Image (tube, rainbow, N blue to C red; front, side, top):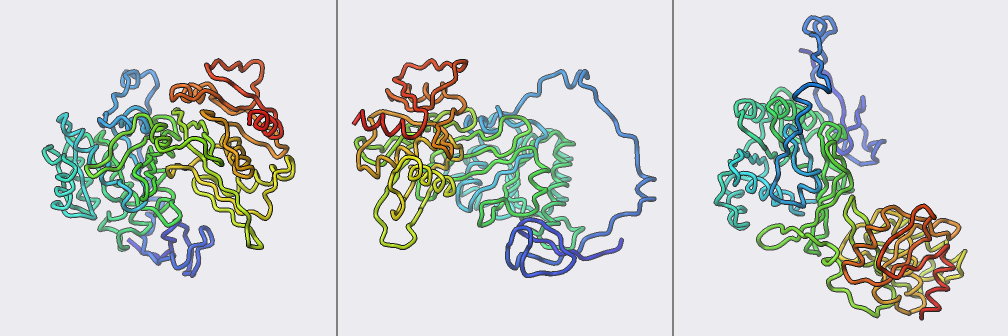
Length: 456
């Protein structure tokens, strides 16, 4: 079979006819590598080997039966996957180095194997002794999990086909796998794509669940070709700050459940522990009567949780004041500060602004606008916000406070944790809110400032 040469970007998978020092798609430098790829077979040969496709109907008896999911024994992981692992599905888990991906998957594999479900853990980065030592540290070395060190995707695929009772196989990591038929080295775009396709096809044929570990780039994206994320059924991202003891498993894609679902874990010396009530974790060290802090009632997937937002506004000796943001979008902060100064007269120009979401939590929804604005106002005036109060609402460029979804769930979570007041946008008549809290509605930020002035 003939060979030809292509140049692939190892960061985003873009293809170029010749080498270049910088990828035009992702702007990465020195990421383009030459790879040898096999030429496609002729159309005539493909036509001879073609066959008619077999179709299935929604009324087939097999489709009428509800798919029985494989429970991992870790409820936070099952929540993110939509209620358990679907047999024959492929899951990709990415995260920063040392964040706990291998620890989580080893705990899942041992939990499943305790129920006498056959599980295989294949590592291409560690030896079997290293995995066993980690299992002893985690206190899970007495399970009947099968561990192997292998990087040949063809051998692993054949193992899956010859083990019909196999229910789960974990590959740590996909970047270490290779196919001998390709000349490129492991980790390249062609090897990652081809190895993943080989393993996914074998797993789906055998109705075996497959979990990949994926490396990430410096920007947090999963390394390798973007097509890898399209090939799998679910993409999960394991995130957290090493300076904090908790980790968040976030669903990015899920064909068998809701996306944007999160699971919260705490990293300890004996592994990852589940956090059933993350709001208490994020608010555990909070002190009352502190200016510049506000409690935001957030929604992550279907889970409501409360997080603390901290703001510090101080005079700046610099010509260009600093805007440091941790856990929120810096562009959103720039918009909000402009609205506060232009529409409400809050003096923020010429001042440094530091914003932090306590605990290392990352907030993405615009409903945090009202809580951030309240924290900034409190910091500028050096006056604490009302005690045991929560804030949520989206702020428009006109300073109008807009409604957000699932308001009742946010308020129920606040009530459960002992909060008594809530500041939120005024709902429409058809969206009546029933909550056992003192609700304070604001049409715009000016109304919020007037209300806070009266309370103080």
